[in-house]
Image 1 (cartoon, rainbow, N blue to C red):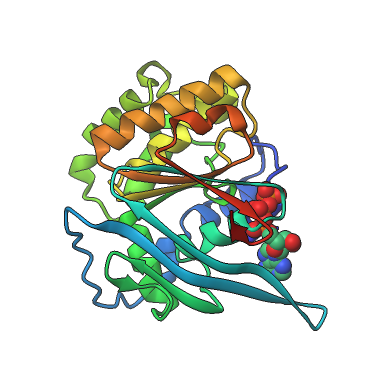
Image 2: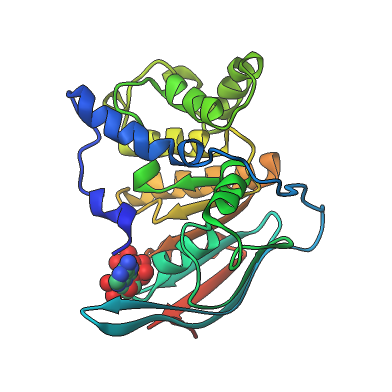
Length: 269
Ligand SMILES: Nc1ncnc2c1ncn2[C@@H]1O[C@H](COP(=O)(O)OP(=O)(O)OP(=O)(O)O)[C@@H](O)[C@H]1O
């Protein structure tokens, strides 16, 4: 199981500031890690694939034995697409999402975010790209329980280094996009699961990333809420010009995808 999934069962509500501080640390990881910002050209051409995965393998050492989790993955994320990774538990979806997000590197193979070679770049360089160009809807980047919806979205702008003069307009716009204009002052525990997920979406797109990665964003939701989330995704692809790559177990939402990659035991079929 990926590192951010280990907290998946944590309740969203904490009443202890130290817990909140720990969550803050997780949520702001990109800014905290980059001390000396390397010079990486982050400009992205308007056409061509946003991300290319070539013959990627990932092997972990478990108890002194190699565990081959990804066994030769080739894929492409084109701009403004909704792409889904589908597969049984343990098939390697999250491991691949880690690679795509630059959180981990392949044992073999290449990953290019536009022209940037993630497979050879340093942690700091990938962190910088991640911070500017990517949004995450993962448990480890979850909502801060003591902050309102508005403050949660504002936090991600603050961490991305967006000037304060732009925060109000952008926060309001993003919460409006996900249909939560009337819930801005609510804290997570005062929102439904679907509403919390929509705040997480607003938070993940606030800094205008090119790529949004979501690890089972509908897993905890009923079918109606899941459909709402997919509708929000389709909307932001158009309005925010973002590409979305998400994992799912849910066969009922596959029809809205532009492309579905089916993973079995570390390979696409
Ligand atoms: N850091 C790691 N060290 C060792 N093994 C790992 C590591 N990360 C993942 N694995 C193993 O890789 C396999 C694939 O895990 P992964 O989390 O990618 O699957 P998944 O398809 O996302 O599953 P799920 O749908 O349950 O989240 C699992 O057997 C897991 O135990």
